[in-house]
Amino acid sequence: MATEAPRRVPPPTVEEFLEMEEASLTKHEYVAGEIYALSGATARHNRIAGNVFAQLWNAARDGPCRVYASDMRLRIGNDAVYYPDVQVICDPGEAEHLYTVAPCVVVEVLSPSTSATDLREKLLVYKRIESLRAYMIVFQDQLRVLRHYRAEDNNWFDALHGAESKVPFPCPEVELTLADIYQGLD
Image (cartoon, rainbow, N blue to C red; front, side, top):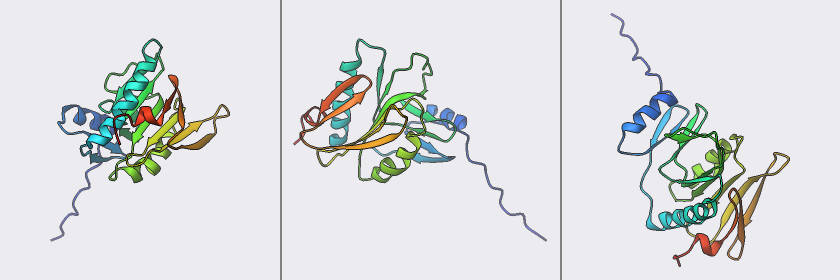
């Protein structure tokens, strides 16, 4: 008697993932049908992300941009859903309340467990977002920011900012010093 091979369960769609995520007590990211649980962040990571959020929120207060911290999801088509550490939305048409789709700026603070994903996978995926003008990668263990930015001609460029640098953000239009970003840390 022949036995049937086990049936392969299809991966969840992005809509199914978002529905599951809404009911979950744990945050997860979705990449091409795979679901990955997120671990907690260190105090240093949270301080850096909080500093960036606070500076951008303050700069955006009276303008059209909104700044979100790490609890707001970012949906990239039907392929991925991430929780960036900070994101800035300036599109007045962006009305979804569970996730964003058109950020102008995305900021990730590097952690040992996420650095490979942030430096490679997310870089490639984020560059596909038409509205994105800058992807900032903030190093946690050294005073350094890697800025990927889209120029007027739609080409992407990179700039590395060190200890005495000012880091330009296109939206809201502001420059943050590394002292602003790493405020309160040694």
